[in-house]
Length: 280
Image (tube, rainbow, N blue to C red):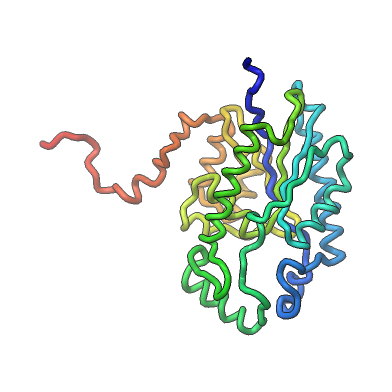
């Protein structure tokens, strides 16, 4: 009894795929299905370099009793460009460091429809900007809110994996989860995780090719960007001052100090309420 203690990941790292053929030529989507768009040679090189940086970061920052025994578990989108990115990233890690890999369909790219004619997609994306990026649904495709729903389901599964130790982590090891996915999917993941509003989501800039962002477990048991990333970096990502302040509180704050009831949004809806129950 007492041996089934939950082993929380030390870090959750979100990574976008490397440069793809579609990133340099939008016309590629007119003849190649989105899920088959390959990486360019530059994209492969970006992924290898990102793998080296990721391994160096994990190795340098791992400390304490479990630090020397750090391990990595990967989740990857089933698209060709993400799978190839992971193969190149993986060259930086020894076999004993990698616990496993799971291909996860729910973290795939937003569906934009089938073959995408460049001129038509340009008009559609202009319409999306007028309508709103989160709720606009592409003809024959998805909206970001649709992506939110499946990413929410993925997060539930991820936590079941953690709760049941499906990663098969030795208690003496430090676990790092790496999610190799897509730009919008990663932003939606963060929206769900940190309970950001639609307006806060729409502030966010996309990740660059092979850019990765590191959420680390803070001293109070909350995940935060504030350990590995500066306030200037987060500002460049499009985060507001309130969003950044929340990240910095999470470095040492607990659920109690953060107040998990989303009080940050109270003033938006109840700004005219009296401060007390005094009817006089």
